[in-house]
Length: 93
Image (cartoon, rainbow, N blue to C red; front, side, top):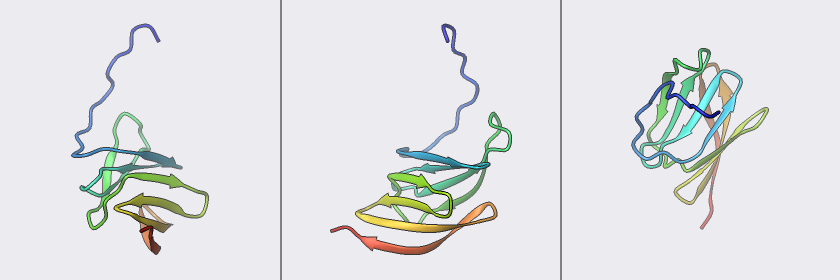
């Protein structure tokens, strides 16, 4: 704790919230969308998907679904292998 060392660096355009479920890391990258990383080896993340058609601000990975908010919309996704699929969306304004 007294001598931290940078293990790895990943470039993002506009990062906000993130969440983890099993071997997947979900990163909200603002206007660049939601990025899904495989984290089987934590020091070697692999980008497997980018959902570019959404503005992603925060994400909550639940047991059976993923909740994401961004651009005044609440999204619900179901999990697929190394991906997610939109179930519903709800405008918050």
